[in-house]
Length: 362
Ligand SMILES: Cc1ncc(COP(=O)(O)O)c(C=O)c1O
Image (cartoon, rainbow, N blue to C red; front, side, top):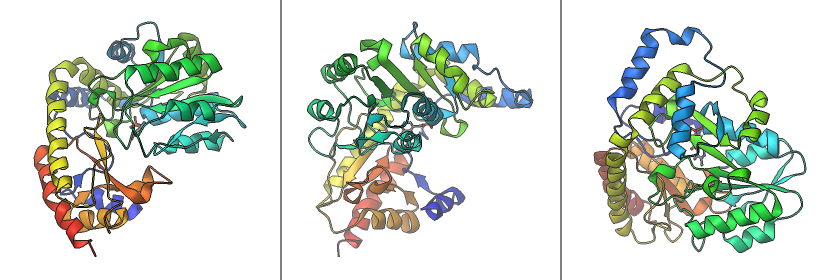
């Protein structure tokens, strides 16, 4: 697996559909802010530990959560790591799904917590409220709600999100609302709008703003909770100052670039669907996806996900991800492709995918 990443990083021609990163154009102000920060050698000092006040203000504005507070982190991943250290002690349980963004399950297990990994690769491809009810026990401290879900792209309608929040309220557990992909979802609902006092929101500018390489995110929650965790964060000395400047520029200009980006992402999904429809034995469990990626189920085809990944990467310079990265139980059934990339690159995938599947149909 690490060879795949070395190959992809060393080869500039590779079309990157493997990590849900956003390669679409955003705004020139972002690069200007990066250059200015570099020219002024801002990086020689530690940044303000709590983050630039302007960035904090813009994030709370972006979420429309003026009564909450946040801590700036090295990407959403650090926010989730620190959160696990804080709310999932040894012996506690977190309600999780399979498929999921498994690194967070690993963070929880590191401290001796247990994850439920409820299977969701069926039906609506998201948590079923009855399954959640069954999983709740006195050790349950939280539910890890990824909305929209990586890798499937499913999202929760308001009434389902409300029902999950009601359970959290009744049983006194936290909702961890990982909204990394929410800007791609047409009707996204924040758990913090329904149950602010028991919701911790995992926020990232990696995927919406296309800043994955700068590692900026944050942990957003009730003021008392954030003041309690602040002293326990890994980013005790603040985070990447250049990244913060870029994130400020991205959020300040978001209304100018987001609609165009979403339009391209929507068009790209259609192109992928047409390619998948050509392949017997391949299908899209969730379409359209509400995120920047989707799953292509190939369980009724003779090809296995790893061979599809390898053939696309090493023979076509297209990097997609075999399902086992995001699912223990169902990883052999699918590949994951992200589509927040320029349309001509998606067209190359659409050309290559049916051919690769034909070659592997043996
Ligand atoms: C569901 C989910 N949460 C959080 C993250 C973390 O993103 P970052 O650490 O780049 O902010 C990712 C990245 O892929 C993700 O898929």
